[in-house]
Length: 139
Image (cartoon, rainbow, N blue to C red; front, side, top):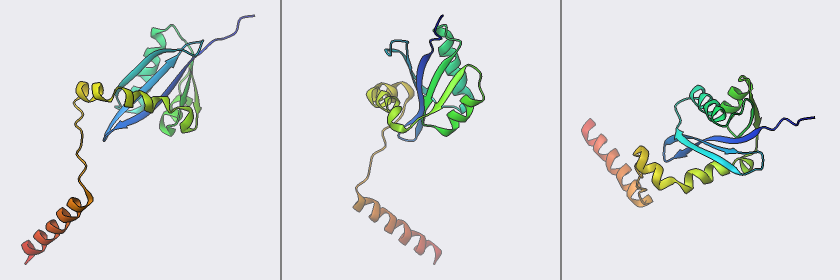
């Protein structure tokens, strides 16, 4: 009796600043990381197609996909060959670790600029000056 062996993919949409990325980690039958994909997230349909292409690369007609994204989970339920499971964030946190681990390369590759964070006092001052400017322009 043969046992159906399916690869496991953890997949989420992760953000680097305000830019969304599809992050997928593919694990083989032994639980070892076989592949990792990090691409700009276009939409859910494109993400599902990307996962199907990844599965084809490894000759997997069926695979399990764990996600913490409701949109991805809903798409997995409608797609044959993907055994989608909605998991708690701590079960799919490896996607966040992946994007953090490769943050510098991703920023360079996709031209994601680091947004400077202003101190609170500067932001407060900017807001007050903007309101004063608007008030003076209205008079």
